Length: 337
Ligand code: AHM
Ligand code: MG
Image 1 (tube, rainbow, N blue to C red):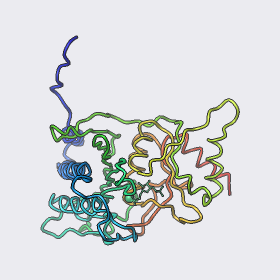
Image 2 (cartoon, protein in one colour):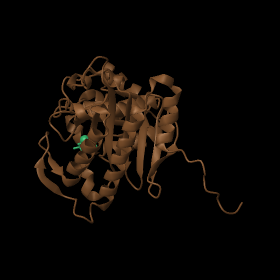
Image 3 (cartoon, helix red, strand yellow):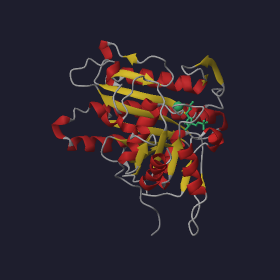
Image 4 (cartoon, rainbow, N blue to C red):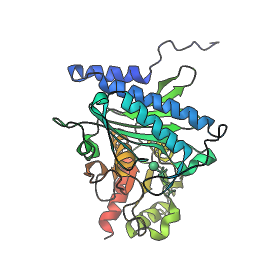
């Protein structure tokens, strides 16, 4: 009783990843750990900028439009630059794909390494000015055997990623990561400047009670989605309807889904023929994490991680979360033709 003793054996992200890599024995060179160190640094840097944004006038438009013709926010541009610079300088990357850049960046020989990183530097930009949670999403491929590191190394199914994760900038910065051996969550200890293991071995409940869709698009939704949503809003007698939670920030909506269970969806519809979310740096990393946490991720008819990308900015419909909930949606796609 009395005063709480300080924990003298904290597990940092680097320590945790290193111990995972040691288990792989000779196969691990330490390069992935170093790459992840670079990514952690970018997340800390972006986190401090997100926090300061309102004070130093980073909020608002940067006067540019990005590849998709959307207005770029100053923070998006800044976060992109932070990541490109750090990942290049790490010496561990060969190809970088960013939501903010039309073309993939092929790293010059001097800095070239064996990993490719696909990322959305600051996702959920519509939420920035309101101070709502936003985040960075990333996926990592190892270049294919014999490849010199070119665009073909990122036009591969998500199942071939060696790691994926996101950092959520909220009341604290949370980095959630999988290197293919489960999912772990780390919280930034601002005083130490380290991500500390706070959510070991995250597992999604097999069924949830929450659905997370932008139902403002209902009039465009296809019948399987409409029918599925009706089934959870008007359940048979004796069962409770699901609760709705939609932040409009994929990182925050997926984070809640991983921890509480339920389903997150951004379907294709009559207006958005392939949905809204980007396959490479939004759908793939989140699908990878969801499956690693014991959940499922589908387009409705196909496993997301099996898709072979044909272009770096392509979109894809997404339903992910608790296994039973996602299977319910898939059933509606099979039944409603
Ligand atoms: P962004 O990359 O322009 O920020 O768009 C992606 C975001 C996701 O974070 C979120 O899931 C989705 O867009 C929300 O879209 P909507 O506002 O149409 O509901
Ligand atoms: Mg995005």
